[in-house]
Length: 121
Image 1: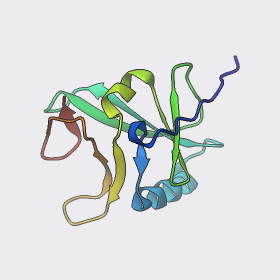
Image 2: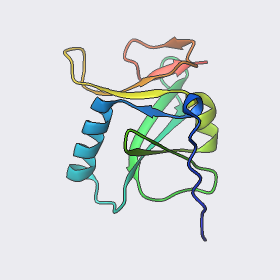
Image 3: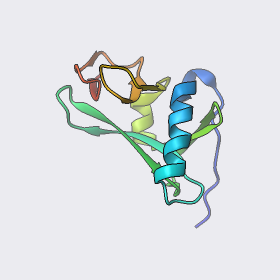
């Protein structure tokens, strides 16, 4: 099956990637991903103390309803359902004392938990 990849370029509706997230993603894809032509897949699933949890993984297969973005040289793919929750989100990476990992700055979230891994709308 052939999938036509459509890049979304409206900056207000895309997933943005900070410089620190870009650097860490490239490093991890080189070290850990055995997938050729890998990209970042972000999504949302039910769970966590606030009701919804973020997901982030490396993938190399597109689904028929995926939305594809490229920001700061990084390709980000989101399934259609998750995109409704993530529109306008910024993906960052924090290596500070309070924890190390990817951070979602989601303008749609009404409430987030203390650990930053779950949210509600």
